[in-house]
Image (cartoon, rainbow, N blue to C red; front, side, top):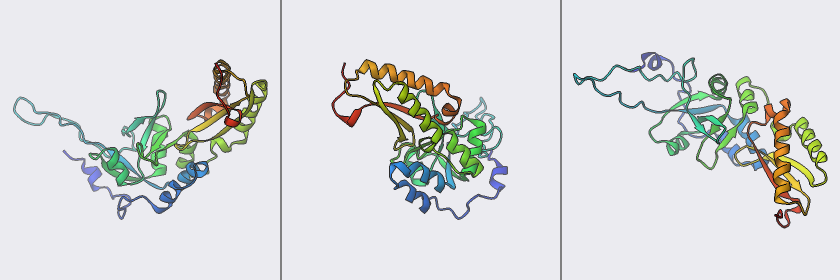
Length: 248
């Protein structure tokens, strides 16, 4: 039986044709250094996917077995926002910029247009506070908890790579390991992950890089301020001036 409450509710964004909003399309074209921030500012309407239930089957009399109706109240208590695995340790709520990206992901999914602030609130309540926009596309973007909190509250977002306290902590860790580490940089990847580049001096070995990168990773995890803002992070050892390779 259909969910009549859902059918009788006014449709949000009734004039929406499912195309990518122009402001968001422009943000997709920004340089990587500004892309994640531009996308967060441009996100207003997104599309949630609803996948059809499997048929419940027939009983002995040939009638459809009793089953709960599928609800489209994805953002309410008991709702089931769809998630996708980003890595071994992280899953994220799936949203789309438009119908084309949704169909490329799963052409059986039904689109439900919603406001990004309501999705962000639901994501924080139901899941771990991570969102992935347009998974599997060239525009795929991962949004960590600080970005999702900003979207939920309507506040401005300070990305980890623009956070002075995080930069100060990285500079301190570089100084602690100054014998082999020249500097530690932070910036966004194409998908919005915080990339921490540990730049090693010439002559550093692979074992040196592994040991120091592991130590720095643990130091960052143990710092409450940093760990709360670096939920999506990639640590990348680099050799100074990008010349040569780390030696064995």
